[in-house]
Structures are given as C-alpha cells and as structure tokens.
Length: 280
Image 1 (cartoon, rainbow, N blue to C red):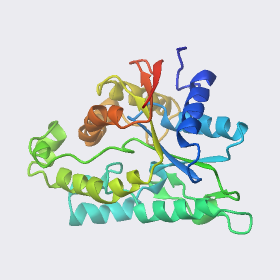
Image 2: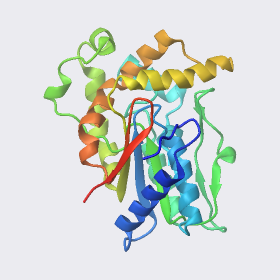
Image 3: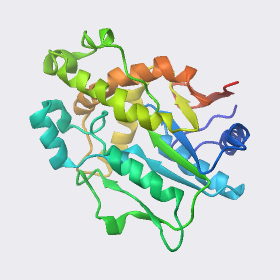
Image 4: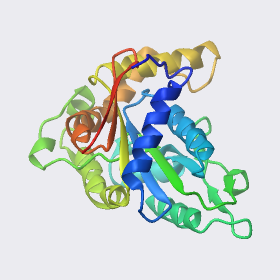
C-alpha cells in the first residue's frame, strides 16, 4: 500500500478502496447509510471523511460528513458540569461534553433534507470555545445517501466497573483520585453514546499502532498553530496534560475497535497506510 501523509490527504487508491468496501457492505440497506469514522487524535479523521465525501459523490453517492467536535457543549455549559459533577469537565472532548440531542436532531434533519426543508449541520469554533450562531451552520439542501460521522471516540464501548478503579495516568491519580470523573464519563459512554453507535450501519477505523504516537501527532498540529501564533496553540507541557484526559478511552479504542470495525486502515507511527482490512 502506498504511503499517505494526512497533511496532504490519503492516497486516492486508499479512499477508493474504502468507498468500494462500504458500498459492497451496505448495498441493499435503506439509505441514508450512517457510517462512523473513528481514529485517535491526529490520525486524520477529518481529512479522510472529506475525501470519502468527494469520492462517494463522484461515484454517484451523495454524501455529507459531520464531526463529533461540532457538537461540543460550549464553555458555559461545561462550566456548569464542572461545578455540578467534576472540575475536569471544564475541558471539552470526553463523553458527557457533547450535545447528543442536537446530534439526533441533525441526523433526523439530514434524512429528510430538501431544497424546501434544508438541514443544518452545527459548527463549533474552538477558538472562542462556543458553537457558532445557527445562521453560520452548514446548509444541506439534498438528502444524502451517505452520512459520515467522525470523531476520536466514535464507536468506543464503555469499560467495566473494575477497569475504572485504578488511575491510568497522573491526571487521574492527582485530579480524579476518587474516580468520580471517569465513572461519569463511562456512564455517558454506556448510555447515550452507545445508543448513537448502535445506529451506525458501518464503522471505518484509522488504526494507530499504539497510544504514544498520539502526543507526537497532536504536537505536529500544535506546532503549526504555534508557527501561526494562534492563541489556542498549546505548549508541549500543556499538550501532555491535555492528552491525559483522553488516554483511558484511547487505550480502550486500541483494544476494542479493531474487532468491531468494518473497514480498518492500519497506520504506522508516521501515519502511513500499511494495509486496509475489511471484516468478513
């Protein structure tokens, strides 16, 4: 398989094979098909989803992509969670910090989208840490045949109660000593998020080789922000703490998603595609 850097997008043959695999698997199912695209932070989910939309549309399958990130709760709502549940919820990203009702409403609107009744896909501005006004949401005026839903924890199952007992890193040890934050996150994953995952017709996985590549991949993104003097760019030390919020579920994804995915794009540590595998 040819190498492909997410900086420039995945190779055309990679994208074509994924589209062909999805079409073969989903042929005969009621449309629109809802397909999850999952991968650890920095793996190139948004890039792949955009390329899949382009390739599917060219193949006669009207498609649209949406991101779990665009359904974040804003700063004020997370501040309320931080006061009422646990201070770590001030940081967006983990299950419990998304508006799942808005996800359901958006999916319902896409299934009936038309020029007379367009659907709107939310957009979240990470710079201001808030959702953009509805007037600036993306408008979809045609019912798609394929909806791609990408996110870092898409498809990840909840953990057992026993798996939550011991902290997995310094953040959990020092700031969640009683396990309250991780139990709440796990409960959210077990409830509303699992219900959303069950709606997927298929799951595409960008499979990272191991967890420690996440910091390297994310730091590459942050370096670009630092070069551009972006206000939200993180220093390496801040980034390391930030990633600890997601380590538990990232490791859960590495353990569980390869056996659940319908299409696996296996990456090496440089984000080069080593092979593509499809479930029987």
